[in-house]
Image 1 (cartoon, rainbow, N blue to C red):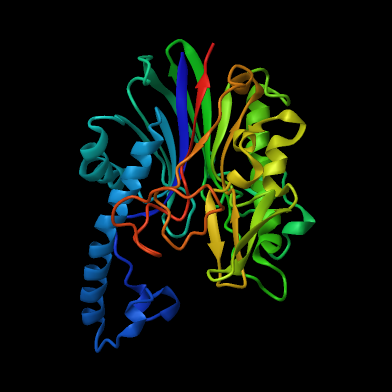
Image 2 (cartoon, rainbow, N blue to C red; image 1 turned 45 degrees about the vertical axis):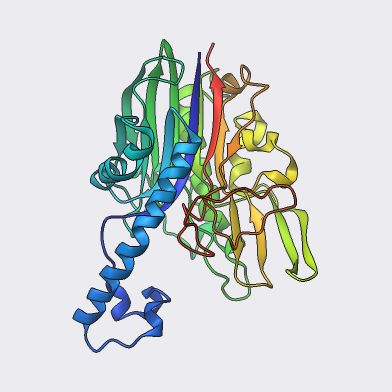
Length: 368
């Protein structure tokens, strides 16, 4: 018996309009900045037209990526609410895979933009085992103080009574056939922009490290410091990487992809001492990336931000399995190392529309 699990940051799976750009240019879409609007009403009409025309193509591509992942259980990040998830499944996913993901889990949590964690599950695995949702627990209420995780490194970034999870750590217990599995869906603090000469990753690292420590503490409190031989998996966007492929060169002379170590960061907290395994690390070093980052030709790299971190009890029976990274929804601007390019989905744009800025990661685990 096996179960296929995926994670995917669907990038702003929303059902609301954002009109704040009329008064704040930093929140204004770049195409709107080409025009002048005589009134807020005119801006609102234009924003509705822009968002709706782009969203249909985008969500078709998002659904194609989810369909290609072909997972029994998929953990999602950046979903507005349960109603949005229902509408997306009915209007897009259903047309591609039929009546697939009957189980839906979402708890609205801490994110100020209203982007939440979600989980979709089929009623049965692809090989016919029944999937049951046994319980759902949010940890959004936990603070640095309540978990004893406030450190000196956090001064200036957070207060002791702040919520430790920028979104949540969504804990979902499932039964697959006769086997139990606990899934922790996460989406850690984003890296942000450089400030005062310090790069965004370094600046915000203490926040992500605290989130990772909190997740590990939650699991250890339940199953024991070594995981207790239980099946669990941490799935989601950790907004951190331990290595990257730096990109230099140009279209005329060719691109060079150079592997660079970047320190373990937050992910190392969760993989340390064999607490979990980053199964994507089973792939070749140059083929682990799930996101293309660029701020222009002077700053470009590929890196892994999306993780399936599986417990020893879950991986010891799946030693010969490799994870899949679905990259066909990436925009055409994404630079692929030689031999990795894929056929993009129809109507994918240079920068947009796209399935997401992230790639889904999926892997089949054997349950014995």
